[in-house]
Length: 196
Image (cartoon, rainbow, N blue to C red; front, side):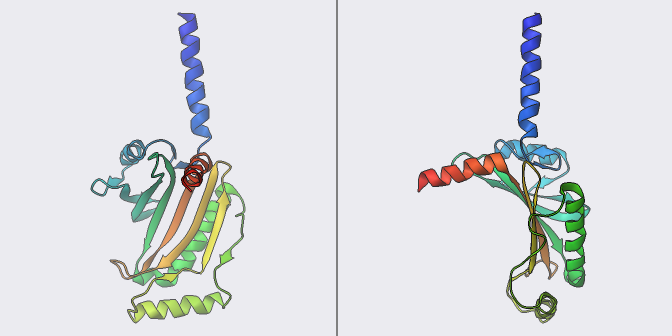
């Protein structure tokens, strides 16, 4: 009996250690099959969109966020989670402020970003922001990259923060946070390389 109890205890410790090696999203390890992660996120208040790997819910104080699981086509193992945080047209002037607020929160949690701030174009960013905003007001139908982005190393993976202006239900765009698990992303990349 004592031997069986020791084995059970070691198994529990092993499972806990394995879970601690994975990046988490909302406290849930990014590991395993998509169906298991979907069920765990449903328990956290997210609602699944039909039978897809996409859910809708509240994230970091923002409502109606679209959460998409990134899975390996070969194994159906989840290696990442992408969150689209909606920014409606009336909030476009605040989009940069919201980006900076999220960047500051991530910096407080994970330390300085690997890249303090990536700027995707060489032109003045303030001018890009204003030009994109005026195109949205004029209802120009195109997707415009948000000119800022940063990456944080969590020790178990990365968190990427960027965004896009795009025609949406509310006429604005969204900020994007992508959580990537190192262990499962490496396995996913290896599966891709094996196919080549």
